[in-house]
Length: 474
Image (cartoon, rainbow, N blue to C red; front, side, top):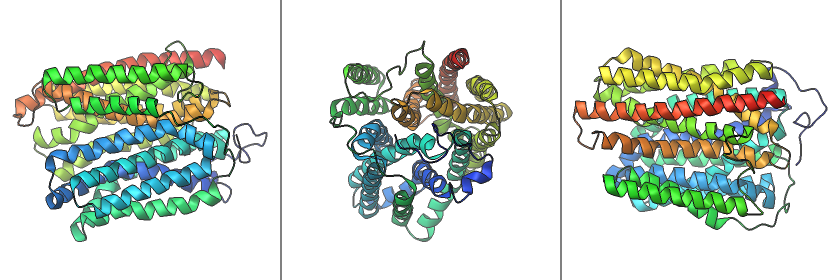
């Protein structure tokens, strides 16, 4: 693996402080990595504002959810393929190729004449951005010294918060004063800037390290499994159970084939509960899975249960992103690993507590516990995300660092996709439905949050296991 000066594995003393990220030495890598993350973040938030206008022009309202689903599923597939592509082509060529796929998908969305074509463009965007995000994460310990890695994650948290606030506003402005096509064209401008930055910021090399073929069957099984779970969210009860069962079989098949492969996608200890990296990857998956319940239902709840308008409901919903960013910045200032491990262990506990507050508030028609729960959940996510990513990157061996690093954004995306589908199904079975009255909506949202609380508790148990394993070998 190629290393920039001062990266992990270098004997040179790293530069301390936030200002180092924007020094001449690190400005290029900082901007490139941040823009790669921003491509995904903005696509998650701003597209939801532009899509209703696209549906008005193109028709196909029944397909609107698939514009999100296909982006997420193909982003996961791209993330799983990223390590293989990086090994075969080198980081720079793999990034160039994947951003070209993203740009091609963006062009398709801009010129789409039907919803089916727009969804196809979203799938291309998702695959390209999945590869970009995974490789960007894999490059963090290569392009930055270890003491700056935690600050890079703090910066990425700010980018997510800006995307949560600014993405819908920007998309709304472009859609209202120009057109929804102009909003989608924003991706072209950002993608071209990212493409131009890759060449000076990402070192060449690493090409032809592997001649292993792309793991097409494993990617198809994994993507198909997540797609079936997503489809289950809008199916009837019996069909939904059958789809979830089929999805679990496909995901298990992908995992077992990967374990037997000589060119595995996953790290060798992935999802082993008695291993630090294995338990840590479970935390990376389960925390976003639990938090997805809020991402799906909370803004809707502020509007439907408490009668707030879209602007106020969006601002209340964004309190989680603000709390996440603030906590991530604070935890990035912790100098020693022991303090970061404590923060990492506290994160899932706070997430579970925030979920429990939200269950109580929704069930009793009390707004204050729900808002407090949002803030507590955001703090929990912020305390955990940067430290656990840095821990897994630093403790993975050189041979496994690429695979481990690439799994971080991929599992995060998979968690959100699976959580949105699972808790959508839970809410619908509890009475939410398409035409739910207030009591039906309240019961459905409370059930989703109760299920998410259990998932967050499991993440907390695995978080303590991760920290314990890390401390025992430090």
